[in-house]
Amino acid sequence: MKINASTQAVLFDLDGTLIDSAPDLGAAADKMRTDRGLASYPLERYRPMAGAGARGMLGVAFDITPDAPEFAELREEFFVAYERRMLLNTHVFDGIQALIEAIRERGLLWGVVTNKSMRFTDPLTRAIPLFATAGAIVSGDTTPFSKPHPEPLHEAARRLGVASDACIYVGDDERDIVAGRAAGMRTVAAAYGYMGSQADAALWNADASISSPLELLKFLNSA
Image (cartoon, rainbow, N blue to C red; front, top):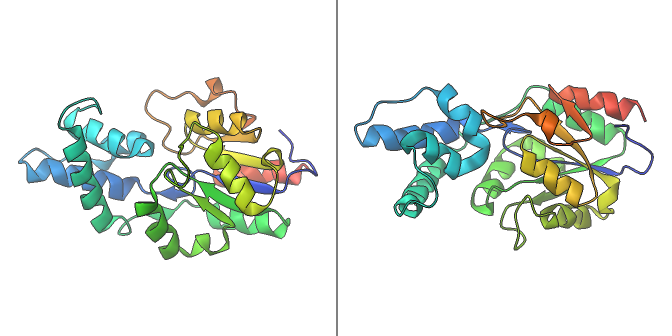
């Protein structure tokens, strides 16, 4: 995939693409285990499912699925536990700061489209200096839809003042690629992200795949 002259913006997923939030997500779920007298799990057990949020973390911690009758109560307990610690160990991935600076130097806009709810996205992005230059931050509940529906991506493009097909969308989950393609955007799979233990980005039909954030510059430089 080449970035051509019509490209005006780059949009990113949040968790697993721009920030590594797995340490705090996993710790919140693990505290729920230890509070119940269960053995602690190592972070690496939680990390592959961090992109799935509460569903993924509770699935690892308690082997539970969203259709279980107790899931809603456990999910709110998890949300509260995560809210209390979500800025303790979360950090921007290596290379992201340089990538964003390079994107802006090329005169491109950038923004975020995440399925994380505003309850968490807003305080996170306010606290991390990287996001001060983001032209749009769209959460999972900003519109009536969440990814893989394309509407959140269209909303980000509208907030940036560009056409959807003038955007590239970068994400570490298949739903990101599905949403980006449905929105008419070119898509890049962030293979360095969480992706899930069984994920194979080669099957997602993304326009490109990168194994580190700065690899995206190869496409920018090929314009």
